[in-house]
Amino acid sequence: MTEENKQPVMVMAIVQALDSDLVSSELEENQFSFTKLPSIGGFLREKNVTFIIACSEEQVPFVNQLLSEAAKKRVTFISTPLDSGPIPVPVPVESVVGGVKSLSIVLDDFQEF
Image (cartoon, rainbow, N blue to C red; front, top):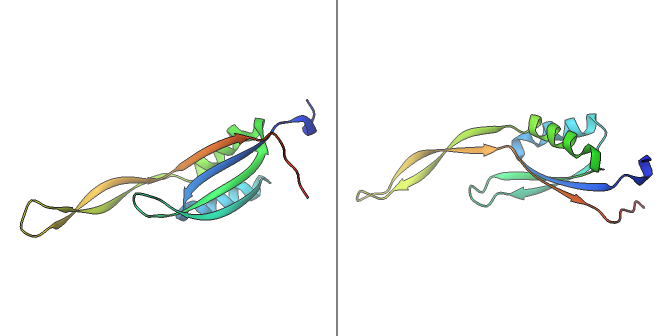
């Protein structure tokens, strides 16, 4: 199969904003075409970055490996109110954040102008 016949894939990866510079560096170093979009997480309202990465179907495992090595999970603490007393008292609760949420989409058509 020639390079021209390989199926194009769009990988959409959501990473925490803290990891976006390292992810960008890794993708640039390995010569992947990508764009970044700012986004915000739903539950913790954390700043994220959504990467849209162009690659071939054969490169998807390598891209996912780069992403997982650059964007690590970490533990953080969030305050939740404890309503058992007359005054709600914030109690720190451990939460895991970071990592990568990745979606690979095989493209039927790809054009570059």
